[in-house]
Image (tube, rainbow, N blue to C red):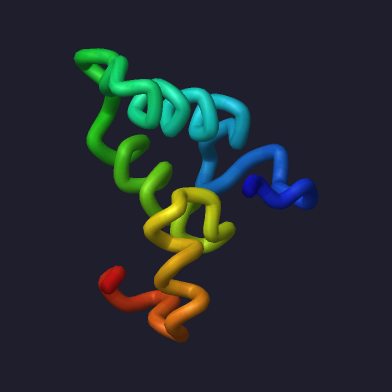
Length: 70
């Protein structure tokens, strides 16, 4: 479940853009070719910090936030 109190920007990228990129991956559309690697890494950090992706939600419940999931 996506938390409601998200910043408008995260590490210089629009939160909306990062969420849209995550939605593309979740829907198996994949990341648009040519997307900067830094933006992909930022999306990963964003998902982890705000526990948006299911894998990070599970890790948080296990007390493994900040480390590798599982």
